[in-house]
Length: 133
Image (cartoon, rainbow, N blue to C red; front, side, top):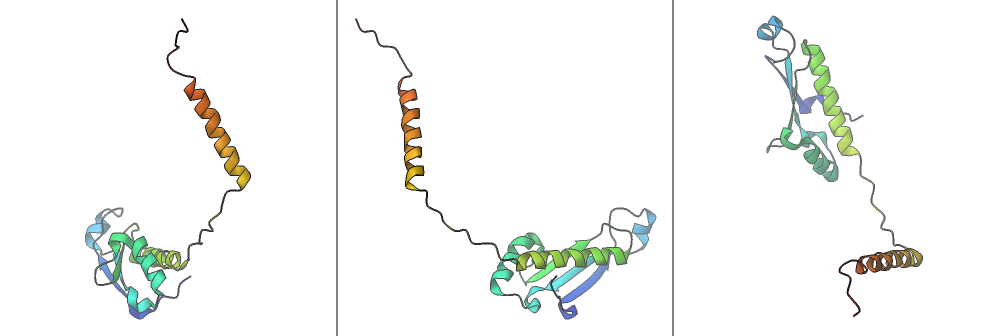
């Protein structure tokens, strides 16, 4: 789990939509989390992956905006936003495995060519039957 400094995070509570009935109209329960990704100190490759994963949630100024409004309380929405932030940063820190190129063996190439020749022979037998008169 990524260690995110509190100085990089700013929270704002908004009037949310969703479950809560009259409570939604009275109390600002939705949590908008803004994170300065440059303050996270991520390596350049992890920053690129985070930018890709975040998509439209990343602003041009390098802020990641997460809006949590699924729950009825500020505390639950705050916890949800922080959990989603941690998941995003953790996913960005995972370096994808490099693909190792493999070369088909000589026998495998021969089998492939033999299969193509057999298929070609089947297809060449199709078509009009010519009379031998």
